[in-house]
Every structure is written in structure tokens, then in C-alpha cells.
Image 1 (spheres, one colour):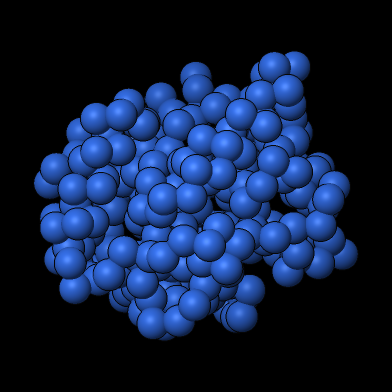
Image 2 (cartoon, one colour):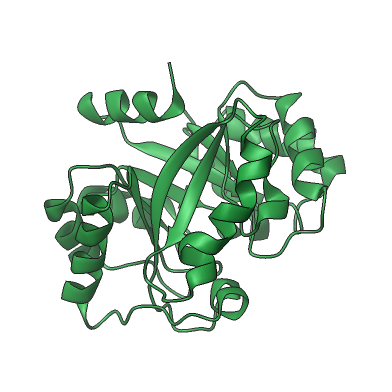
Length: 240
């Protein structure tokens, strides 16, 4: 079964999904065994790997090391073509539909084809929507795009709907790494009501209570990264 079909089946069964995001530039390979053990004993269902800027070859090394300690699906969340590796199970083929920089709407995708042609990695077309979080994020700096304003939820909803009509299979709402606060229930529920495809939400989630708020608002899959980087004890709140 493909990763995408498994996500769809889980949603149909009412199961909420949680991805732990590992940024290779901020992750210690020496700590892989103990960190992944915490992931395995938590309610996490997926491991995402990627970052806005990652040293060449570090993504592949990180994925190879993670695979030694878990059976969870490993999904690439790449900030650039250099982060694509056939070692992962799937790739979020991210189109930054909240921005208007052609490099991140289609340009980087064209450059990735030579790598994907000879790979069995599952490619999942994903609409990536960056929403303001109260601070300038790495995504803004790297892509030179502006996030959508929080106070204009209809613009966010319409952008997500446009992505679905373009044929994207996932919509990813992102407050950005280290966001001061997670996206509001109003934004999440407003987008969810207009979608027939799975909704991913990430950024600013630092407690189980906040996680439940995001799930209750309509997120099908939640991504948490910075909170685990800053305090691995957070895993204790998320044990199976």
C-alpha cells in the first residue's frame, strides 16, 4: 500500500496522524537511536525529514540512520532538490502556492526530475501554504516569498481550494519553524470545510493541549518539529 493510500484509509477510519519532523541540519546522528526510540513509543505515525537549508548529502545520511531504528514511513519534506534521496519512502512534492516565486511553484520541480526518474520513491503532489507566524521564518528567507496574513482567512481558504482544483493531493498549512503560535482553529476549520483532500498542519505546536486543538479544528495530519528539538520530554505527553 502506498503512503498516500494509507493516509486516506486512516482518515476514513477517523484516525488522526502525527509526523515528527527531523531537520538534518539540527539533528545529531549520534543521538538517532535514543531519539527514534522516543518516536517509536509515541503516537507518531510518520517521520518527515527536511529543512529550508540542509548541507548536501546530510538528508540521505540522516534517512539511512533513521531507517536502522524504525519501521515508520519516512517522508521527505525538502527545501531544495539536493534533499531528495531514494532512501526515503515518499516525497512531498511541495509547490509553494502561497507565494509567487516561480522557482518554488514549478522551477525546483523541473530540476528534480533527473533524480526522480531513477527512483521508486512515492511522489505526493502537495500544496504548501505559508501563513504569518509573528516572526520571519527560514522559508520566507529562502524562497523570498511573503506568508499569507492570518487576518485574511478567506485568502487562505481560497488558496487551499485552488490547490485542490489544480490536482494537488495534500494541502499543507504551515506557520513556519519555531512559530510563536500555531494556526487558529478558525483558519484550520475554514480550510478543512472546503477540501476533499487530506489537510496537514504544522508550526507552533508545543503541547498536547495545542495538538488536540489543531486536531479538533480539522487537521488530518499534524507535524511537530521544533518542540521536540527544544525539549524531548514532550514525547512523554505523547506516549501510545
